[in-house]
Length: 619
Image (cartoon, rainbow, N blue to C red; front, side):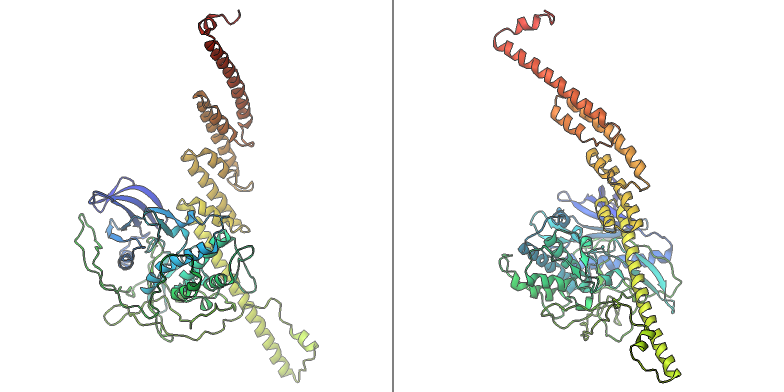
């Protein structure tokens, strides 16, 4: 793809990343003479039958309109164009020069509370705009937030259909729906992993980044309380009770107990903002936001040449349900920015291009403490309703009573029928005895069902995590692949993936002439891994290359560089002893040469350099 011109104007010159569902490139816009860099996202459906392409095309158009609407914010990349070419879909977005937040949230680096508060606040400011448009990002994480170089502001990236994992499901009525499982382990709450994202799912991710800043730990390294499911993260962390409680409220296990809106969180943070920011605090409106004015920035559908700007209505059309036979729909790119419209509590949930509630299983919930000063909780379903005109209804979400979630299964096995009887329970008749026994069996069955449900949910999370690790490996994101696999230390399949990622990471480093780092990476592969033998061969091969490079440095008169390079060869390498012998030889020869140079300099100082140079060595 490198060097190719797409849309008759965008020349691809660098691959930025991607996976099995889409690729991202850096390109130059030939129609713009200066500052012409842009990001091109290629979204390639895995199936090309007409029905699948029709579904993908509608989803693509809807996502493009959402991206265009969000791009009116100064901290969200603008959508410059979108088009289809050779049955592949392309999004062209503004290039944000800078670095992503993962370069700031380093392992072992603990931020001050003031800096962590400012970080959470700045992310929430942008996220408030996104949520005002009833859009869920669904994959907020440090690598999807960039620090813009020119003004040091945070920019949210990776909106749109770039990592959607979708399969078609046929309901009993034959209607077509799409199920979605997206997000990143550690930053994605349970309801998101089960395919039911809510606005507060994004709030969870922001809270996790705040905790990561304070602890210096990746989210997957934090432990949770087995009794409640809540994170245990404050040990050894210098954090005030106020900010700690706010973060706890953002990352509650049960989404119903979590902060429901960004306004709620910012209102709680406001008293803590003194001294952390110089700008005046300004909250977004708490009421339902007014409809956005029509935007006129161009979304060009390119076919050879760009079209003139067209006016785009802020209302998004929803995906029409298909009565035809089900056809698998592949993912066509990044995590979709899900359009959300609240519905009445008792209304039926229509099928959506983003989420199918009918196909996701609910996880057992546990009772948790609600965050302080939380307003009444409102629940927003991730579905879209259509008006008679085919537009998304902007009705306000209904208020629902906050009910106590069902408690998790008890830690101790309930008493058996026999033990209860032995403790004084009087059974009056055989009928009542059978009735009592039936109740005991029912309780046992309910408990067994709960445990089976928990195990199924745990397995679902495991499979999701393993799939994500494999996707990271395919995308060439080796560092995150290794980190994610290490978080599943007790899983044999994850450890196999870990070794695969380490091998791929080492090979990529070696291809970039980073041989020392490549050897360090490949040396981490476990002895029981299938690639261990190959790793040892590579250590020897790369060590020989390092030794040759070190010899070249020595011949160029750079002894210190040569020795440093040779010392990088590990002891388990087949050329280690040869490298050490070479170092000793270089030191000895260099010492002799230094002695000759010193003697010659002394002769020059005495004016004897001609006599010295003509004197035979054995004289």
